[in-house]
Length: 62
Image (cartoon, rainbow, N blue to C red):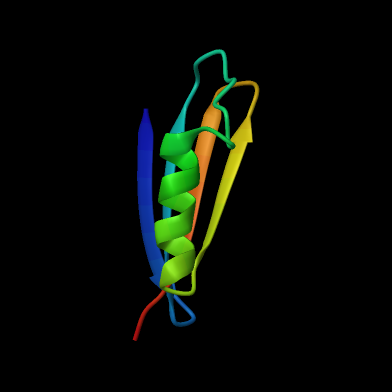
């Protein structure tokens, strides 16, 4: 598992990734709820998969 947090251009980007088989369901309640919370503060949430899974939350800051 890898976790990266970066800041710049008025935003914070949080990436969480693993090298597993992938297959996270972006429409599942847990990830959908996380995406809803990120959107509620004006951010974006992306799920990428296969191979592995990567979650990316971009949040405004400043």
